Image 1 (cartoon, rainbow, N blue to C red):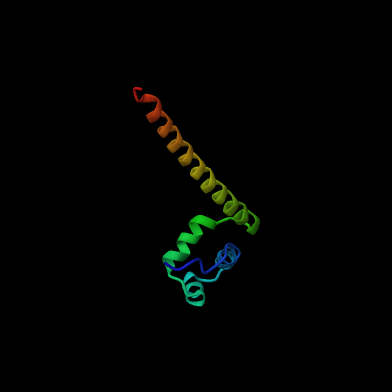
Image 2 (cartoon, rainbow, N blue to C red):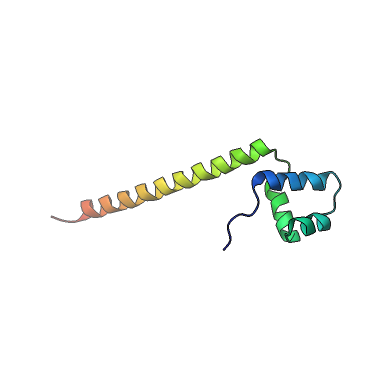
Length: 88
């Protein structure tokens, strides 16, 4: 699977073009994307500024780190419970 092709800043500028009156078809043709991609971007980034998109990226990164820490803690907890439950 390919990596990201467009940054959040580029996506927001494309959405701003659409709000200024450019048609979806011409935007998709110029950017080389499918209309489904455009509407997915619109649902995710619609109404955002560039600073909002950067903050969203930071929050998603932090959320991933926290999920990883929680999973590791749950594994440690399960291992400790198993050790304690054994009869000596």
